[in-house]
Image (cartoon, rainbow over all chains, first blue to last red; front, side, top):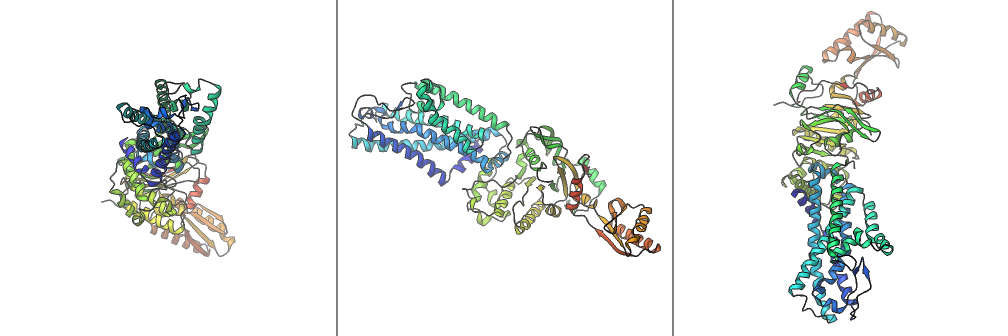
Length: 268
Length: 345
C-alpha cells in the first residue's frame, strides 16, 4: 500500500495537476470568502438562501463570531467536495481509459492495496490543498473584515481557532466522502463521461430538485448529507446525524468498489 | 554454459529428456476463458520451456491476448489451471515480480516524461530507481527520457513499453504485438531489440500475427486458433513439416510415370501444376542435408533409367506462413505437439 501511495503521489506531482486542482480549490475558497463578506448584511434575521439546509448568506454580526474567519471556507467546502469527486473519479477512470491499469496491476497485483494506496494518496494531496485553501480564505477574510468593519477579536480566541481546526477537519471529511464516492463510481463505470454524468447529475441538480418535493431528502441523499458535514450541520440535519450517514455511505461505496476492483477482469 | 540453439538444431532425445527434467516457465492445463456463451480460450494446454524465444501466434481474435492477460493475473480463468515459474495463476503476486510485460499498446501517462512514467512503475513495483536510466539506455531512449510521453513517436512509445517491461530485470518477458503499428524501419529495430534482449537471458514470449517476424526471431512456437491449441514445439519442427520436393518432366505426359516411380520407392507423390510434388517430411529424408542430396541423386538416376527427363528438381522450404495456414485450415481437434526442447541454453 505504501508503494502504491508513493507511486500515486509521484504521478500527482506535476504542474498541470497541481496548478489545476490548486487553482480550482483556492479559487472557490477565495470567491466564497469574498462573496460572503461582500454580500453580508447588517440585518440580524436568518438568511433565506440555503443549500441542503446550509445557510449561504451571512450577516455582519455572524461574521464577527468566532466562526466568522472560516465562514467563506465552510461554504466553499461543499462545492470543493464536487471538485474532489471529479478529481477522484477521473483519476480512476483515466487509468482504464489510458490502459495504465494493466501496468499498475502487473506491478502491484494485490489490488486492494493498490486501490487503498491510490485513495490515500489522493486524499493526502487534497488535504494539503484544502489547508492552503483555508489559509487563503482566512487571509482574505482578515483583509475583508477591515473593509466591512467586522470585528476580528473573536476569530483569534481559543474558540475561534477551534473553529479554524474544526472547519478544516470537516472539509477534509467532506473531501473524503465525496472522493470515495468518486473513486468508487470510477471503479464501477470505468468511464469518465459515465462516472461524471451519473455523479454530477445526482449529487448536483437531481438531489436539490428532489429536495423541493421531499423534505426528508436532506437526511438521506448523499450529496446533501455531505454538504451538511461540510457546513458542520444544517437547520434540517444535525452534524452528528449527517456524519454518521456520510460515513455509512462512504463505507458502503468503498466496500463495493474494493470488491469490484478485486474481482473484475481487466480487459482494457 | 548452454547457448540458445539455432532453429533446426534439435536433438529429439535431448528434448524429451529435458521435458522431464526442466520445469516449464509457463504451463497451462485446460485453461479456459468464457465471456457469457462465447469461449475465447478453450481448454488450452500450453507449455513454454525456459530459455526460448517463444512465438505465440494465431489470427486476430484467436485468444492470444486473453491468454496473456490470464498469465498476468488481469483476467480470471473460467476453468483449467496454469502455472508461471511453477506458481499458480490464481496468485499472480507470487510470480509477477519476475515477469515483465507489454500488453497490447504501451500504456503511459501522456503528461509525464518517459523517465517519470518509469519511475512511477518502479516505485509501485518496489524496484530501484537506478533501473530507470539503465532501461532507457537499453532501448535507446536515454536522450529522450525527460521528454513528455505525448511527444514520442509510435516506435518510441513501443520502446518505452519494453523499457517498462525490463524494469524488474525479468526472467520472463511477455510482449504482446510489439511491432503493432510500426513502419518497416521500426519493425526492423524492434526485431533487433527483441533479439538482443533474448541474448540477455530471459525467456521471451512474443504474441504476434506477423509470421515473418516470428519466424526470424522465435525458436519455439505456440499456435492457437479459436482459442484452441493447434501446434506447440520448436519452430524448426513446424517448418520442417512443410518442406517439399518438386519435379518437372520434359513432357508433362510423363508425370504419371514419374509419380508411379516415386510411389514405388515409398514416397507420397501428387501431381499438381504440371509437376510432381513430394512431401519431404513424409519421405523422412530431412534429418541431414546429405540425406536430401542422396534422395535427389537416387530419384534422378531412377528417372533416367526409365527414360524420364527431369527438367526441374527443386526443394522448396516452407515459410512459417505456409505452415501456419496449413495448420489453421485443418480442424483444430488434436493439437500437433512437438516434444519439449530442453532448456535451450
